[in-house]
Amino acid sequence: MQLFADRGFISVNGVEVLDVESIEVKISDGTKYVPTMTRNRRYKGTVKGNRDINISLSTAVQNALGSAKLENIDYQNNNVALTFEHGADRYTIPGVDFVEMTQGASGVGAEGKKSFTLLGGDIIDQVGNSVLFPTSLSNLA
Image: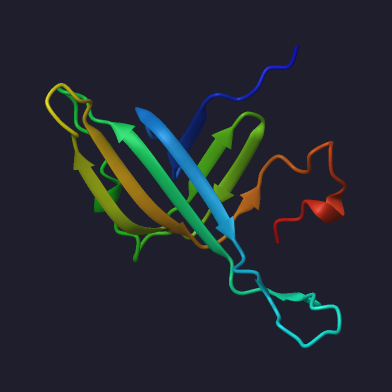
């Protein structure tokens, strides 16, 4: 029987962020079709844009303890790196910058949450390639 990952962990400049409820790292190259006039009405290729690295995370807000204050980091004057671990995968995302933070509860008796949106400058695979794909198919560069 295989065991599958059910948790993700993050740290910012080596300090683990506690009470994480959800995290998502999204990489997009902005790939688009190049429309050309072909006889078979099929695209002949694609073109890539710049790589976008978007990070979304949500933490639980405790009643008696302060929450992570990622919104107060001086991103402009510090090199902020986020490390994301999920199962056996581990990525470091240097050049992180802040986008937005929201905090609140959806109603009486609902759990308090704090959500962050961040952008990354790059992404580095700390583990290496999956056994399922050759190196040429899993290069993040």
